[in-house]
Length: 467
Ligand SMILES: Cc1cc2nc3c(=O)[nH]c(=O)nc-3n(C[C@H](O)[C@H](O)[C@H](O)COP(=O)(O)OP(=O)(O)OC[C@H]3O[C@@H](n4cnc5c(N)ncnc54)[C@H](O)[C@@H]3O)c2cc1C
Ligand SMILES: NC(=O)c1ccc[n+]([C@@H]2O[C@H](COP(=O)([O-])OP(=O)(O)OC[C@H]3O[C@@H](n4cnc5c(N)ncnc54)[C@H](O)[C@@H]3O)[C@@H](O)[C@H]2O)c1
Image (cartoon, rainbow, N blue to C red):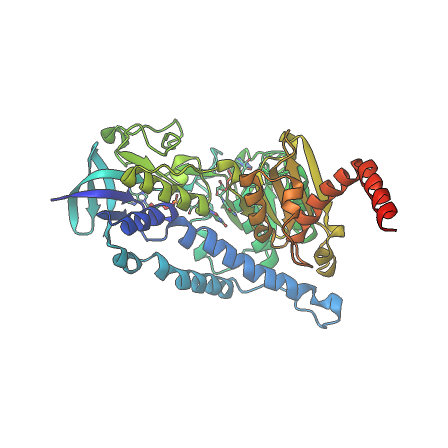
């Protein structure tokens, strides 16, 4: 049995990118996956949720066609089985890109089975064809995370749906209660409401999307409520019993219950102790700034580190860890410049600091965005957050397709551009992407205002010289 240069455990976003990177280097690489290549993102996360949100958006648009004279405007409830058909098609179209066949040309071997460390340089793979021992020079833990049920009496016994299981549903529930107003709860809550369920969204803290700008939370809440969602905030669920969720404000009965109360690391039964790898009290693998665990031969990337909860960051971490291990080349990840998006309508896109952490902000309300006006979507806003040195250190965009807009802002945060440096790039009109441009230009205009004496003097001199 020869030794692999790199063994990657877990074939999700982090593991697949790490394996591809190692394969491109010409390293002898093995990827071990116990379920399906593609991981959470492909099967139960990003892809199905965005596909369902797309269908729900189409249904919602059709419902509002009456206001433009299309009579009778469609009403009623959508067919969940048909909606899930679109979800399945999206998964099926993307799945080949994550398959073992796609890795073969890069020289990556794939083994199906459950990996367990047996020492600091070896692991055992328990699969359909028995057990197999494997030695490695380096290993990468990329085992991800899974839904965590809040410790609420009766919740586990109620067998709620989670983001792992909801995709098998084919009957639209009449009354759906969603526990948790984070990204999963808000995205899926809005999708089911648009399809025709009566949705109640229950959040323990005092606002939805508590990690985002308070104004973003208010915008999303307003939109959800205008679409018929009942939003209960400051409502920590105390018990689930008798087909109802109990907490402050009385029982909320449901036909189906969806728990979206966070994630836990997939590190149980991985044999971390045998490998000298440490995890914190919640199970997240401890890593240094190079993603090395307590055993410097073993790296970790993606959700399992507790430092990433996004596919794009999981991939970047996977590539970075593989490069560090195999080539000894450090690829620093600029965490404060990593953007993310909650794909509700309106989308909430964010990078870097919140306004509460910044020195100064530049905000464009979207009643001043011509694209928002033409779309009838002036409920959004763009806020740029400046640090002490007047450089863009954060931004939030709330709008349809805000996720497309935030990419250029991520470049601004990474490069530490001032608003006038940002404004030098001409943005196309009319787009939501010109929102940050106009917000930056308000900063430029304010500077011009302050320099009015200088510009006035220059104007005067030029007039005298040239007539
Ligand atoms: C509903 C939902 C929507 C989301 N939407 C977005 C989004 O729009 N954008 C975004 O950026 N992120 C989104 N995310 C988050 C994103 O899905 C995750 O951050 C990402 O998939 C994590 O990738 P990973 O490689 O770390 O882990 P995973 O994708 O979970 O992969 C881990 C893999 O390891 C395997 N594994 C575990 N243990 C073992 C073992 N012992 N042996 C062998 N294999 C093992 C698992 O089977 C799994 O395939 C969403 C998540 C959810 C739940
Ligand atoms: N678009 C995206 O990029 C995207 C989409 C979905 C999920 N994700 C990622 O997946 C991860 C999981 O998302 P999530 O929304 O499940 O988790 P989360 O931790 O972000 O949100 C869970 C919410 O549940 C609430 N909660 C906890 N216990 C409760 C109780 N007993 N009663 C009522 N509310 C309770 C919490 O206060 C919190 O707001 C996140 O890290 C997220 O970033 C990303």
